[in-house]
Image (tube, rainbow, N blue to C red; front, top):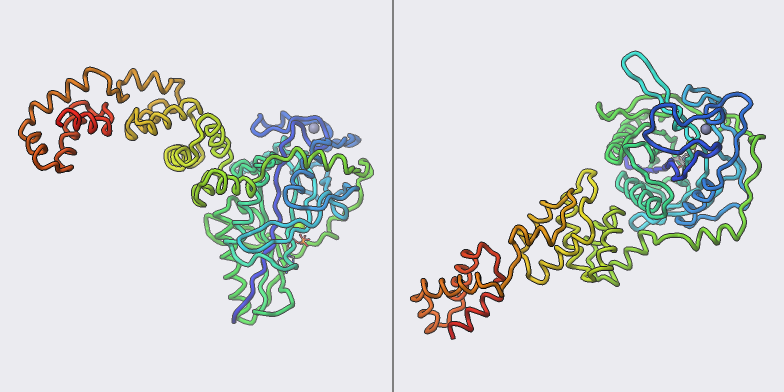
Length: 470
Ligand code: ADP
Ligand code: MG
Ligand code: ZN
């Protein structure tokens, strides 16, 4: 049987703010366990939450970047559940009146509708080691936004590739907008995937299965394809899909049941009496809009049209904001978009692949690129120089001079070598005089380059040779 696949995503991202969402503890990754906590974020009885307005601002910024409407009044509600990662036994979240509603994100040729983005607090982190479990409350109360796509509206995502493209673009937008860092390994961006199948062309939706605990985009891709196949097999055998939450085990490459059927009613949401409604003015929205940095789509247009880059180079450079920012910084000093792009898409990217950072200053990099363009240094020597000063405080120009790798035609040395070669290869020179064969001239240039160990500029050597011979 043929099926239509329906995919819905719930994506969590930790906001970039100085302090937590409802207390003044630091919002900081990696501090020693339970060092950024207070009675509020540890959920001690009687402690009162106070809203961090910056978290609201960041949520609005995320919404505006994705074309959402902003609710002028938003409400915080308590989502009640018992689990050790959240000691007050409820999470402050939003249900009926979230901050952002009705957004969308372009994925390949589809405009994927998004229901909402709401602001909530993150829970603590459970660490299981051998037969003990530990809790780190540092993450408790960190501002978190949850985005929920609307799979029941057209068009919806249907493949693992579309879901990954959605997440990739979303991550890029959050990073460029300055809303969140979205470092996957640090758990700063996490996604749950909802999947259902229905007979091809049918209007009625099938029962959905939610998959949680998927770390990383590759694993999400695998998990989606696994779930589609699992549901297909059940349906083909005449079985029924059970509405449930499943946990993906990436090592085994399969998922298993975590819990069946769970609805929002189970959480007994109700407005949090400790927190006032959030009022958002047109003025505030306008201010945030006006301070919005350039987003990836607009940046892409600029790279294609203003800089004349091709689509591939553009995508590669934009994929990493650090690369993209530094690329534009370099252009401010040396406006050769294609030549500079070339160094980023090859040499720089090769050196930061797999999570490294750029370890060369823009002044040094620009010096190297310009020196190659101006034929003051050979490309290969320049690449070696880049490797040599990468991660050090060395200055490119000084180092190039010290190593003697700069071409310098005016130096007596090159003239000496030229004369020497002309003398030694007198016969060849005679042959060139009579035949004027460029191949012979090239041979002579090659001899000079060899003698100078590449320090000379080949083009200029050729000119000088021609002059001398004729
Ligand atoms: P829950 O209350 O179980 O979390 P939601 O209504 O919040 O369910 O939906 C969670 C996600 O699942 C949303 O992205 C939603 O669009 C998606 N979804 C809802 N129904 C289906 C379905 N039949 N198939 C696939 N995804 C669905
Ligand atoms: Mg949900
Ligand atoms: Zn606190």
